[in-house]
Each structure stands twice: as C-alpha cells, then as structure tokens.
Length: 367
Image (cartoon, rainbow, N blue to C red; front, side, top):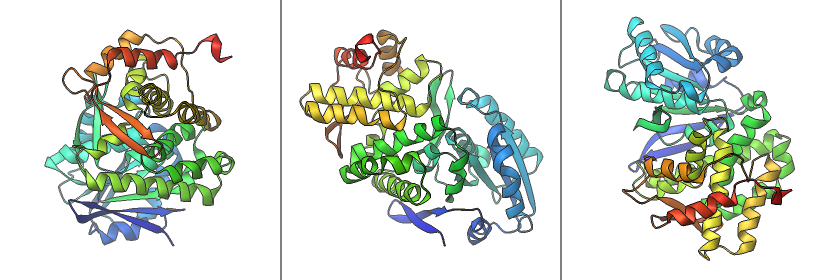
C-alpha cells in the first residue's frame, strides 16, 4: 500500500504526492482524477524512454482512448523553447484538447518542460509528475514551478502551474548513476539545512544506509524531504516570501552552473553554492566556525564537491546580478542563522560574494 502526502494550494487540497515501489497503483490514481477514456501524452527523454516508457504504457493500456510517447533529447542544453514547440506540434497533430492529460516521466528537465507545456498549451491542460531521479522526487516535481532556460539563463521563462498528481516509484532510483544520486542528495541536504535540524542530523546518522541506497531508509528520506518542501510551498506557493528559502545555495550555484556551461550537475553546483552561502553566514557571525565547517564537510561523504577549479569570480558575480532572483542592483541571498533556520538577505555585497567564491575555488591548500 502506498503512502500519500496531500499538498494544499491557497488552503485547499490541491494534489497528492504518492510514494510507492511500483507503477501498479498509477492507473487507479489517474482514473480517480477523471481521465478515463481520455488521451494521454507521456513526455519523457531519450534516456528514460528506454528504461520505463514501455512498462508505463503497458500499465495504462485499456483505460484510455490513446497513449502517445514523445521523447525530448536528454540534457539541460535541450531545455529550451524550440523543444517546447516540438511538443506543441505533437499535441496538435494528435488532437489533444483541454480534457486530456500530459504525464511527465523523467527528471527535473522533463518535469519542468512538460509542466510548462501543460501550463501554456490551450491555456492549460492537466499534467502529472512521475519523477525518476532523486533530484526530481525531492525537489523539482513538487510545488508547481515549470519552465525552460533561455540563452543559457536557467529557468528564465516559466509559470507556476500545479500538477494534478505526483507519483513516485522509489524503485526507479536503482537505475541512477552515482553522480545523479549525489545531485539529488544536495537538495535533500538543503531541506534539512534551511528548515529542519533534526532531519539534517538524521541524514548524517544514516549516511552509510543512504550511500548503499537502503530501500527503507530511502523512502523515509524522500518522504521527510518532500514534507519539508510541501510545508514551504503551501505557505508561499508563488515565492513571495518563505519559499525563497528553497533557493539556498542556488544564488552562486546557478551562476557556477552557467559559467561552467552545465558541465557540473545541478546538485554539485547547489553544494558549492551552499558552502559559499554558509561561509558568508559565518563571516557575518551568524554561524560559528564549527557550524560552517560541519556544513561544508558533510557534503563530501555524499559525493558532492566543496571546491571547484577554473572559475572567474567576476563573471560569476555578473551572472548573479543578471539572474531572475536578483532584486534590482541587489543580489538576494539565503543565509543561515543556524542549521534549520534560514533568512533572506539582499545586503550581501560583491566583496562578500567574491570572498565566498574564493573560499570554494580549489587550491593546493586543500590537499
């Protein structure tokens, strides 16, 4: 039997997050939403298609009038409006209307793109998230953020658009590479750092079980991480206040991601940005030195970097100022009062950011 969290929007029940170890309950969940005998478009990518699309279609066959599968090329570089136009064309050619359904089967790129397609096709069509990476399961599939990159600027075009259901088959995580798993774990760690010190300590205490991907530990970790994000997005669904806490590590992280031409994973960049934000918090005497070094060093055993080579601090600062999260001439940072307690701050200077970037720039001193 699956476990369920319900996410509210403006105080009213909006959609369920279902945690399961198979796709068995998915047809029933979709039918309960009223999509029997409607058309379904499964949007996936070229990697996930070969892994899970056929088995998903077999589970859904018989209950719906038509099922199509469309795969976008895998990779962040394909998260753009040109690929969205291709999805629109497929939906139009197959005569999808507002009563039909889109399913996002994949990681964060697929979820963001399928969600943005759903938000804009015919001014809105229902969609379901079926995240297949740890990053998507614990972060991007929850909360209704959809969008695409524009000329290298991450998620510059998008919409807040809530899914009708988020269905997590935890077993799909077995196919993740170590790098993909670590990338998702960066967001899990972030949730504990900004909101729940007990969860942060639980992650440390269960380090080895997480690294071994123990099924019982994983489902507990994912449920707790999702519940933290659920609480945040319920209070602030369109990021006008507390939801911005979820951007911890992303201010410098996104800039590094673009600066490195997406050669590093999103989670690796979030880890680097988190170290930088914690460093600024320490230098402002909000964190103790011991707290800063603990946060920094705890990324290492989970396969995440705390330093990076070949980065230009001035270019990173320029990218931070051009990010959609900037506030006029000020850069919006999420800093820490302590583990589990984040604060928003728009007073971080370029010199402070420069010092933080220097802190995460690899040198022989780390050897």
